Every structure is written in C-alpha cells, then in structure tokens.
Length: 101
Length: 218
Length: 226
Image (tube, chains in turn blue, brown, red):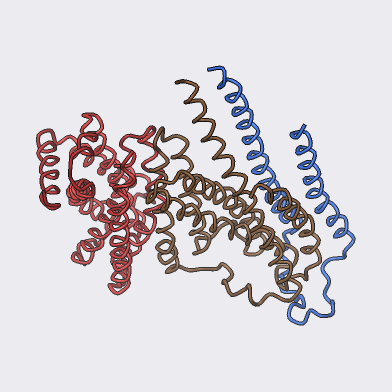
C-alpha cells in the first residue's frame, strides 16, 4: 500500500516538473523577439552586431539544448528509481527466504 | 535524511518548474540574444560536474585511508553525477557554441579541461563495472589521480589560446539575468543533493542485498 | 631490509629475467618503430612528410609503446603468480612500485634511443639541435607517464579487462604530459626555436612528476591491499 502511495507522489512531482516548461513555452511564444527597448536594462540594450550573412536560427539549438538537459536529468532520476525498485524487491526476496534457512 | 527526501523533491521540482519562466523573462544578452539562454542550464550543469568530481575524489581518499564502505558509496555517486552532468554540459555547450562562435568545438582551456575530467570519470565507471572484484579500491586510486590532474590540465591547456567567455562574465550579469542564473544554480545544487541521497541509498541497499544473500548461502 | 636494497633486488630480478629472453624489449621496440612508420605513411603530403608533425609523432610513439610495455611488464608478474608473492613479502610496498618504475623507465629509454633518430630522419625534424633540452623534456615526460602508468598497471594486474582498461585509465590522466611534451618539443623544432618556452614546459613536466610520484607512493599501499 505504501508503495502505491509513494508512486503517486512521484508521479505528481513529475507532472509539476513537466508543467513548468510547457507553461512558460506557451507564455514565451507570445513574446515578440527580440525586444530592443525594455526599461531598467541599462547595460544590456541589444545592439545589432550580427552581420547579415550569419543568421543561424537560434530556436532549434535552444530547444535541443534544453531538451537534452531535461532528458538527461529525467533519464538519470528514472534509472536510479528503477534500480532502487529492483534492489528493494531483492531485499524483500532475501528477507522471505532467510527465516526459513 | 530519509524524511527530508520528499520535501526536497517537491522543492527541486518546483524550482525546475519555475526556472523556465525566469529564464524566458530574463533580458536578452546583447550579442547572442536568444541562444545565450542555454547558459542558464549549461553553467550550473558544469558546477554539478565539478562538485561530483571533487566528491568522488574526496570520498575515494577517505575510502583508501579508512576503508569505510560508505565513503565508497559516495565516491561512485560523485562519479556518476560527474559523468551525467558533464555529458549534459558537453552537449549543451557545442549547441550554444555553434551559434555564438560559429564552431561546434574549440580546444580552449575550459572545454578541454571539462572533456578530460569527464573522460577520467567515465574511465572510473568503466573500471568499476568491468574490472572484476576488488575494483572499488582501484577506482578510488583513479578518482584521486583524476582530481589531482585537474590543475595540471588547466595550466597546460591554458598556455594555448582561449576563446571561452572569461569566468568574470558572472559578476557582470545584468540584474534580470543574475537572478535567473543563481536561481538555476541553486536548483541544480539542490537536485545534486537529492541525487546523492537517492544514489547513496541505492548503493547501501545493494550492499545489504549482497550481505543477505551471502548469509543465505551459509 | 632497507628500502633501497629492496628496490635494487627487485630491479635486478626484473633485469635478469628480461635479459634472458629480451622479449619485452624486442617486441616493444618493434612496435615503436612500426608506429612511427605508420605515421610516416599517414602524414605525407605530395610525397613529402608534413611539416611540424615530428614533435607530436615522437610523443605519441612514446605513449603507445609505453602503454604496451607497462601492460607486458605486469602481465609477466601475473602469469607466474609472482604478484601475490611480492605483495606478501615483508617489505615496504612502495619499494615494489619504485622498482617497477625504474625498470619500465629503462625500457622506455631503450625505445627512445631508437625512436628519436627515426623520427628525426623520417620527418626531417631537427631533433639534435637542442639535444640537452630535448633529453630533459623526454626524461621528465617519460617519468611522468611511467609514474602514472606503473601505478595503474600494478592496480590492474589482477583485474579483469586489464588490457583495454589500462589505456582507458591512463590517457586522460597523462594528457598534461603529452601536451607539455609536444609543445615543448615543438618549441625546439620550430623555424625560430624558443628554448625559454621549452623550459617553461619542462617545469610543468617536473612538477607533474613530483606530484604524481608522491601521490603514487602514498596510495600504492592502500590500493594494493585487498
């Protein structure tokens, strides 16, 4: 019973994690880019230094980078969780067989 | 430690959920515009990599000096963290570099140092996996040598050219960027604590299983 | 028994065994020569050797033959089970390390005596112009490489997959040695030789040697105990 409850907790936590980027991507899509005149930005007023030839689209690179980061973290946490699961099952198995021996 | 696990998970999850919002709202950097925003995850992942490397080296030293099995658990955790977050940095870096510098890779100090340290800890994990019994002690030696190597790699590569942004870029961040940056750093550091807790627990449970099965055989 | 006496006895043992068969010496020498030849065939442009590759090829040949020699040196101990006997002997463990280190160094010196003139010949590299400095760089670099290699070779002597794990572990750690060696040698070989730069790289190599030999002496005992 305890296992089912903790699995739900973990699922809820992951939903929270997934909701964040989904929400802000939606919010960000409404932002015009770039924004040359924002108040309170004395130092970083964007200057157009990019020569016209060199216009690699940045968005795919950015999305790829963040996807990699999320996938790496998610993948690693998932692998730890799976290994913990297997070990807990092994311990239960050993615990069952021990009193009999 | 066990009881803090779930609250910590919730905090980390919330921070990571909020981080993209902070990043999206941070001001654009003047020359690199959108693609510079990779920096908010790229730099913290390197922080975690080097923390993992030093954790591994320190724990290895303790393991060799005192023979404490728990130190060995921390050592392997540090190495895994270094490899996973190092890989993240090694992939996000070139993606950023392609747009910002025009090339995927350059042999400058930070990149080369990061690559060498990453390779050292991949070798550490390979040794533990394929070295057969007793490879924990051997791997501890590799961990210590790997960490001792860091200043040497840094200085030797430093006497070549460097085009990586200087470390001083962090203090010169504008107010909007600084907040988002340190928020992400904190999120990554807490994530690291969480992973260390989970991973060390995994190692301890594994050691317990081995003991139990050994007892069964008697 | 004093530390130095133990080192001397162990070295003598290795030398006598090696002199009887000369197996490691000949095979490593041949490997080094083939290595340089392969590079000579690979790095050729319009029938002429490429410029400025001499330094890199020299150090790569040293690194590859060194890895081979280290693997073979400990393989011999493992095969005759003498490793366990050595570890059980009531002597300072680090003496075993130092004896092996000097033994492999002697082997590498023999290899370098052949490889340096060969590279100078095949790649038209003026390696003999600044001979003392070059020798100093080679000595410091080989000591550094061998110091780490002997440590790892001994560690892996009883491990599984030792053949492939030795280079996997060794190369990332010895990157500073290779960088310093190649750049120092390049500084001597370039059109306008710069001994000051070579001296700077030499000092890096020397500090690497000191740090890693000390580290190896400290960690050899705990790592080799079961």
